[in-house]
Image 1 (spheres, rainbow, N blue to C red):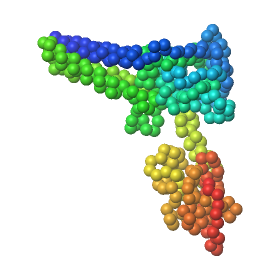
Image 2 (image 1 turned 90 degrees about the vertical axis):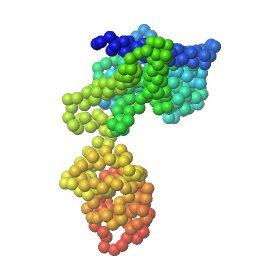
Image 3 (image 1 turned 180 degrees about the vertical axis):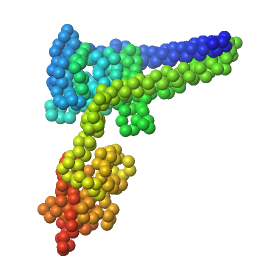
Length: 409
């Protein structure tokens, strides 16, 4: 590296560091000036929680989760604390817990005062891959209002043979440390890749939170301005310094992406490595669709490829209908509309209605299927499942059937 290159690197690093320090001062000043004169905080050690589902033991101030219920990879443990809390008095919630292994997820849940035990609970997912503590800005959840009667933590996934150490939960209304922790949790917490990740990966775990992308843009812009001001003051930097400033910030931002990619790789290895194709499908997030497709193939559809009309109350690229079509191959599947095209259905065809499908009616007593107020066709119900119903079109009756009204499948 020649003297000019070394000088450019030095200028770039100094400008990036100074810019970062200025942004940190702005952040600290904002949270210091907007905070209350007497901040409120509450810490509940893990030993005060109980294992409502699964097994746990108390070790000092911690609660050690040692047992999960359910079959792998969907095992669960629930830690609960029944205690009256005023949620509106606290904005930031921090969970102090050992880092979750790949394939596990945590969710904070709470029940409001006055809710019956059987009522639906409010919840907030917790970003994974956060070591030590994860901090959440609870004001972004519309359910975080009013007095609470219970708060807890749902742990779901496959921990393997590992025990999880839950140290406790802290609540504060303001604070520089928790506010910074909330940002870092959003930026570094892992969100599992899904079918949309090939096109776009969110830079934050929760929608609507401050993204690191505009922060990086301000960081780089301020650093470039500092280099320019230094040049006006007589300490001109080599032109390549401007490129190095942008590159340094870009690499820093790219490290967040690499962290997500590494976490997804670990999760994929934990779920799929060394397993058969069928086992991999049953461990994936859409395993319910795969299991349903296997039931249809073994208990409703013929072994040889058949004509199948797949009906779904959606238009365009719907994930459920497209993924189920893939799992049902090599059957000849029409999957382009809510109802079958007029005159397209013939004897021996199959119709799969992924419920609910408006306009489709089946009269079981007469084995008649009708859609869109058209003439009914003879059909038999071959398979019924909470996800849908499979019909087989039979030969038309000798005489036209009488108009019927039936229940929607």
